[in-house]
Structures are given as C-alpha cells and as structure tokens.
Length: 160
Ligand SMILES: CC(C)(COP(=O)(O)OP(=O)(O)OC[C@H]1O[C@@H](n2cnc3c(N)ncnc32)[C@H](O)[C@@H]1OP(=O)(O)O)[C@@H](O)C(=O)NCCC(=O)NCCS
Image 1 (tube, rainbow, N blue to C red):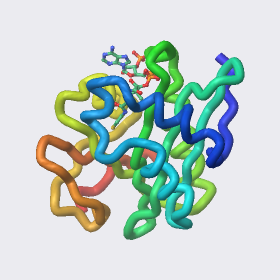
Image 2 (cartoon, rainbow, N blue to C red):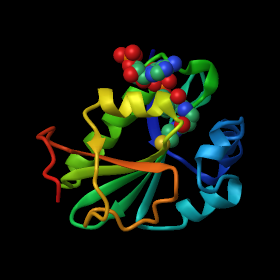
Image 3 (cartoon, rainbow, N blue to C red):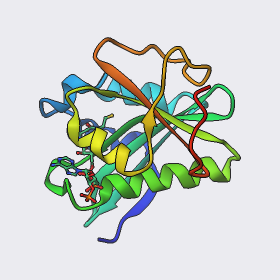
C-alpha cells in the first residue's frame, strides 16, 4: 500500500478526529475531538502527522518532546477499515525515523491494558514495558495504562 506522510493541517482535523470516535477507541484515548487536536497543532513541542491512502486520511500520529532526549508517541490511530494492513507499523517506523533525524534516543508511549492489538504491535516493534517512575516519563499515567519504550537504535533499553 502506498502511503504518504505529511504534516496535519487545521483543515484535516475533522477527518482526523472521526478516526478516533468509534468505541472502544475513544475510551482508550485521553482527550479526543477537534479542540484536542487544535491544541496539538498550536504547541511547538508537538508534531501532528498523517498518512493518506486513496486521497483519504488512513492514520495519524502525535509526537511530543519528552525529557532526556526522548520522544513521546502520544497518539497513533489507523482508520478501522485499514487495520491489519501494516499502516500502524509504517507509522511507528516513521516515528523512529523522525526521532533519529532529530538526534533523540528513545520513544515512550502509554497504552490501555485492554488494547491488546496496540500492545501486540508495540511488542512486535521492539517496545518493552518501562518501570515507573521513570526519568523518561513526564506525562501523567492513568490507572489501567502501561508505559512502553524502545531505544531509537534498537538496543535494549536500560531500566533507567
Ligand atoms: C493499534 C493500531 C494503531 C494498529 O494499527 P494497524 O495498522 O492495524 O497495525 P498493523 O497492520 O501495522 O499491524 C501490525 C501488528 O499489530 C498486531 N496486530 C494487528 N492486528 C491484530 C489483532 N487483531 N490482534 C492482535 N494483534 C494485532 C500484530 O502484531 C501485527 O503484526 P503482524 O502484521 O506481523 O501480525 C490500530 O489497531 C488502531 O488504530 N487502533 C485504535 C487506536 C489505538 O488503539 N491506538 C493505540 C493507542 S496506544
């Protein structure tokens, strides 16, 4: 599948926010809707990028600068009809490439415990669970969420 990654603009936000509306997806995300995404676009510490397929938004990701040269993969969502076709994997590879370009060392994310599909994907992409508290985690970790991390180089992360 040919995917094009580009920066998200304000005109994309309606399509983007629709991807995260179906349950249980919305339940696994802390904050949804156009206003949430608008705040991301306005924040210089965050990047909002999307991929298109056949002229429609196929998925998007939100990245936020974290402590100690880490990058938080704050959100990753793929359009439901395209699940299982490698779009999620492609977006994680794009995240690793972006972190590499910027000289960052580690990707960190949190994932809801029941979100097995996402957890499997992160494991398959080399993420491991991070013990908390961690110097790489500046965001609030809600009950029922796990934090996972991998180094950009692919070397096994140290516990701290
Ligand atoms: C999680 C999500 C981003 C995965 O995207 P995707 O495009 O379907 O993922 P891919 O097609 O790249 O799948 C890659 C891996 O995910 C895992 N996976 C895919 N479908 C799965 C399923 N039904 N059950 C369990 N694991 C699954 C597998 O490890 C798969 O690897 P494989 O293709 O070698 O078997 C997507 O399901 C999604 O948007 N979910 C809703 C939003 C969400 O939960 N985001 C994550 C928040 S932390």
